[in-house]
Image (cartoon, rainbow, N blue to C red; front, side, top):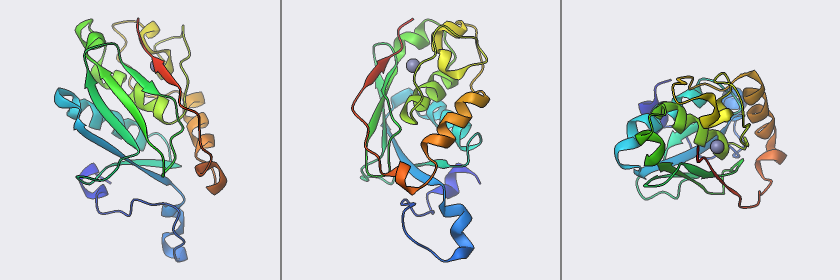
Length: 179
Ligand SMILES: [Zn+2]
């Protein structure tokens, strides 16, 4: 599925539907709003695609104009930071896409997928190797790995497994990714 057609999908995953769509609907659908992402809209879309092609329990689609999105992405002059999820369909978290990390040469798609990892409930794992997405800046400024490792994938799958898990609220915690 390409991102452009995802807008046609229903945005709530909690509605009961006939069995034909049952497998599809078991994924939690989350929306993101890039209207304040400025020059980072394209890399944010690539970070979203990383997650959509890495996990099956959650799908991230672009919000409709004016819709209250689950994940707000805001371009910011500081270091990247993000609210720690896992965000639920009724909730909202924010990714501040910080320009300082870009100015220092960190991979822009990795920044996006790392911060979205926080939205999906992954904490930082620092220090860590480049093979870990959540090692963030400690993976090295030259690290171009944009994808979660198997442990990170498994954690997100657990975070979005089952309807009960989808409805658990999480406290507001903001993680800052200064190097
Ligand atoms: Zn982080």
